[in-house]
Image (tube, rainbow, N blue to C red; front, top):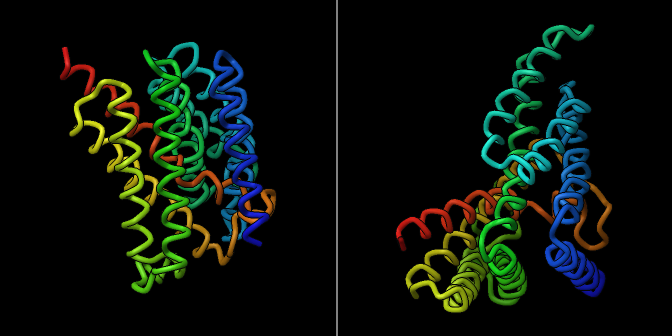
Length: 263
């Protein structure tokens, strides 16, 4: 199982690096595919709980947000608002009467599965975007890999057993420490101050962990071990990308604020 997990991770990282380096419209296209696959899994979990959300419409609007971030990044907030309103109106007039739960799960799908990941496109298109994107991904990879292996070898104290029984405090701390180290080194490459690099690594490490726990919370509520079975050794797309959901806007706004402070 470990060998399969490692091979899958290597393939995922390789494909991510290819998409990052290609840039242009290739990167948002690859991201849009991941968003569609991830939202499909999300909506299957939601349906397992008895909800009937506006799945197709939410997925369509979510993909639109990815490409709006590419072409009209300053308008993505308005697009999110209009898209959310469109989902509300669709649920209001569809033949089957919608419930509050249908509305809530549809809006969560749009926010969690579409709006937040769209910030990866905006991050890629910043000045030095490719380097910043790579460093952010490297922080997540360092945190995930470090937490997994160190936790298995030395972890004793359960971090949050009600949501994620296998995660340990020791593994989480080591993973975040790895992210801080990568952030520090990456910050030096970008000519940031040492403190800025350390804070960036800490922010990404903690946010990646919280993203992982958030997806685990949803899986536990749906009574599922994995969000899917598309990726051998990892489960579904959401299982592989949960650490990337909240980190995208965090990284973007950290770099944006840092640039303003350095002027």
